[in-house]
Image (cartoon, rainbow, N blue to C red; front, side):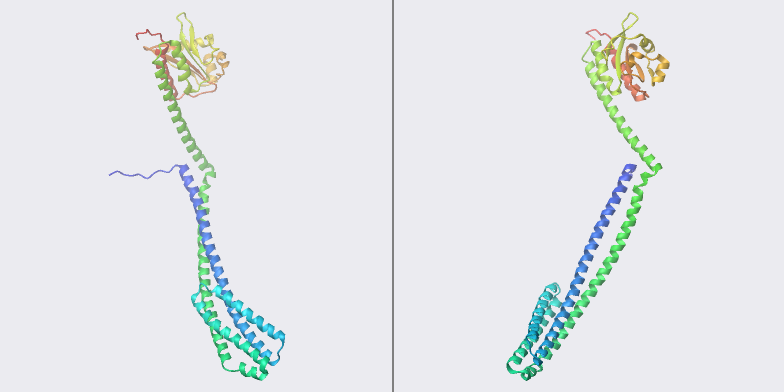
Length: 395
């Protein structure tokens, strides 16, 4: 059975997760706030509609009572203004009934009571119109007898009872909506407070990198990651350069061509400001087979000693800073003219356990040569030893 070990989060991943959690909580808080705000708006609208329905029901009852009062006044003292007011009251009641029908579309019980109340309202106004007609045609006594018969009071009582029931229904709906509204408001406040607290806590975690100690650890970690990535890229570049160099050297036996390949291909991954391949000429001096600057075509006397030491010891000769270079070899002004004012490295070119030449690297700044740098340079030395040594065509 294979054991699965939990993944160890890096500081960058932890910082990303914390920041993402803060943003998610803020987004959820916005969604919850919108949800409860929309419910509050719907509840407010429903409460307003319930209040409006109650006002309309009372308005219908009040206008009907006003119409009855105006009818009685017209019987006692008929005049055109009272009649116009009575007609306008009837029109207002009809408008109120239409508005209440629209408001009760989603309440079947209330709509049923409204449908029952509408005939009573119509009957009452029909009685009022008939009373006015009797007053105008038969006189006040006939109109009073018609108005005071039993039908009209029964209709008024029935209308009064239905309006009371409609009011009770609206009060019940209003109480229920108010209860839901209060509960939704309380839940909304609670969730918003909880989300706010969590958001501040996560925000405090996300702002931890502002502390000097945390910032230093994160910077160190990021720098280590960057250095690791850079080292991998350098290693890959050196492997590609070696592969290309081996392939190219295998196809030539000319030392000059081999020296040119060492300078053009092999030295690129070290990022040197100046490079050259120098070999002994058999007369006690040295010959420049190839250099990165064509003006460097002979070996100056100041470079003769470190080159000779490299050939004699078959070991690296190096100076990692300008100060160390001047202490060991002097100013080496000939390298300064080629832009190489910093560290230097003399690499022996091996062939049959003998140094056949020297590969010179000069840099424009100080350089701490790592083990990887020296291992790569040593590989160039082993490849370059055979490349610069004269070989017969049959070899």
